[in-house]
Amino acid sequence: MPLHIPRQVLLLTEESGVGGVQTTLHWLESGLVERGWKVMRLPVRQGRPSLWACWQAARRAQVLVASNNFRPAYAAVVLAWLARRPCVVWVHGPLHEVLQQAGASPLKTAWLRSVYRRASQLVCASQSSCDSLRRVMAGVRCAAPQNLSVIRNPAVLPGAGQGDAAMPATEVMALGFVGRLSPEKQPLQLLSMLRLLPRSCQLHVVGDGELMGAMRSAGQDLLAQGRLHLHGQQAVSAQTYRAWRATVLCSRYEGYPMTALESLACGVPCVSTPIPAMQEMLGMQAPLWLALDDSPAALAEAVQRCLAQAPSDRQVAIDRLQGQHRLETFVQVWDELLTRLLQKGGQGPKKHAVKLDASRDEPPSGGRP
Image 1 (spheres, rainbow, N blue to C red):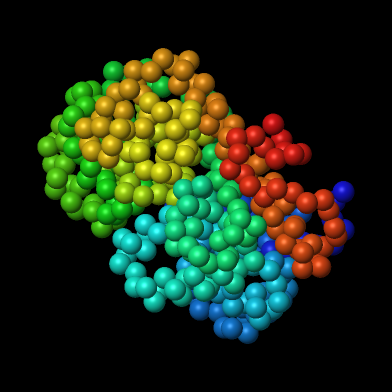
Image 2 (cartoon, rainbow, N blue to C red):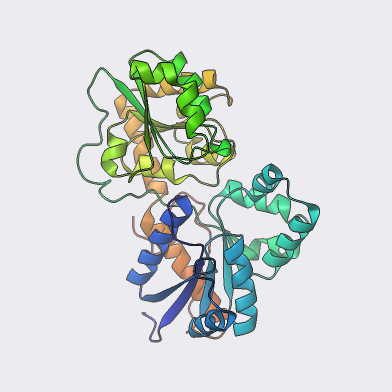
């Protein structure tokens, strides 16, 4: 039965931009609107809204969602307390690894624990992110199972379901990379990988960042040979992925990368070093696409295994992976979670309890096939 009262959610965000968090947030917002939610956004950094304006926005909403587990999380916890509303903190990346990479002090880690302890619900974008959060929250009550859910990111991209997703029938074997050219993405590893692949292989790099200069310098020979193409920051579409035989990732860590999911949505395999998030995504259905270790040689071998795979086997793996990452399931489980928080707070009609975990392969009860 549809709810008879307006359901309003406030999304607390960073300033707008590109990247996996913003992409996933877009799909959540549009999906909730389709399910009858009134969605309001409040940027907590851009424009520096006053505390009064933030409190007013929180009072108008029934539940607050922090779009990530840093500044939006701080704001969500404070505003939820002031406005007496439930709040959700959305954890995308592997927090333990991020804090280690940043050299975070014990004081900052303790501060983050205190913030997350006060959230009504913690939602992780993958099981690997959930495990990482548990390591940070070791011994803290808010990491108990009833306060921690896994809702995996969806595999979706506009236009992905249209046209032919078969590998391009050309002699050139084009590979792609989409992401920031930053240290944690390790894009320079891709140059060493490319040198180990047949000369017919080309690499197209879409993205910009602090390592662009190093990529140009270290890849001068590959650029001159026409094997390396540095496209910079640009819009990515289904056609972008379909021009490639495979996408490649070699990050030091990831939460649950949208690049891989968008590639799969377009019917294009994604080859990766064996970081936990990609083992979680590919391990059961496409183990051949995982490198044996994080070296360029192992990544090159995984690329060649993927390209040599029988098309029918590759398509079976892609179909199963797409089925495990449906947008409909993603939105439905978020809808159920937020509705449960309203009922718990006495702001919505009672419904039967639901299991709030989209980490399983099959959609939850009532989900679309």
